[in-house]
Length: 178
Image 1 (cartoon, one colour):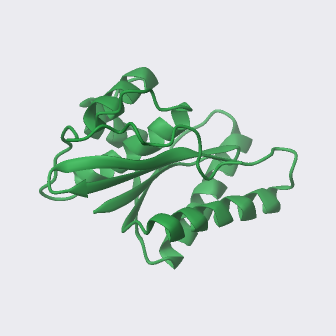
Image 2: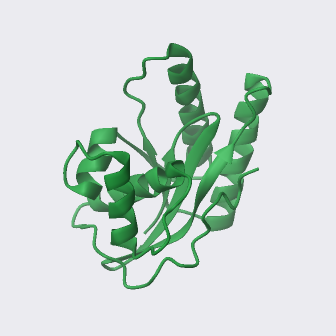
């Protein structure tokens, strides 16, 4: 199974691609798609859509897992995040990928073992589970890899287990980012 994990956002949309063979997971790529806040909203959404399309075309994931937006204090940010998430869902569905949404607590529970894990604990678990020696940066990329790992853990009969290989060749800063 090959999963594209998404930590949605309009200014910074994290992505992480994790492939599973049997019980072993391997991170294939991770990064952040950035859009310029000075650009009009429709153009930013179109840019995000094109970048997601390029990721799906290049890597051909079977599944796209997206972290669900549950609550944000800033209404404008929540709306933009929701719009970004919708663009990703539509593009993934158009490409024939299975799309699944997970709450932040589901992601934390699946990867770190409890829903109260902080970002540092999550990043450490992602690196440990995948055998990555260098911290994933920016944090949005690590969050997206965690979403992909959550999906792999949620598939019936699955468990998240330590990778057999190092993730040393994993891109650290948005291979598709601008």
